[in-house]
Amino acid sequence: RVGVLDAFCPHLGAHLGQGGQVCGNHLRCPFHGWSFDAQGRCQHVPYRKAKRELPEAAHTRAYEVRVLLGRVFAWFDAEGRPPQWELECHADVEDGLRRSRATLEIVRHRKGMG
Image (tube, rainbow, N blue to C red):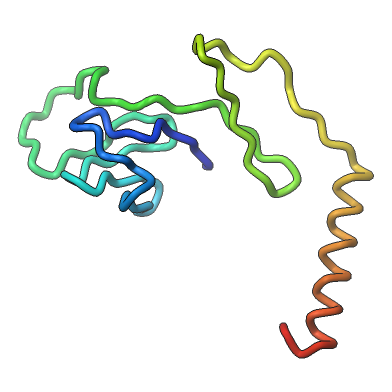
């Protein structure tokens, strides 16, 4: 599943895009190794011994995403509202993209690039 998360770790504010690593299905913070799933829930704190559930403050914000035409679209609303409309993709656009990809692969192959 594709996820788009807030840029900063809720622990100490490390920038997850600067040194954070995708490990399996989680994004790991570069500072202390906290791991988040695609919904922004903290799934692992390496040095944590307690078995109780992590508090809400340990989670980070996850944005609504849609994957269309092989691309990821994220919804952001400053007030946190859900998407106000859905993206639509049409079969003719998808077919056109598939044909153009096939054409590009043929050109690469003929030029010895693929």
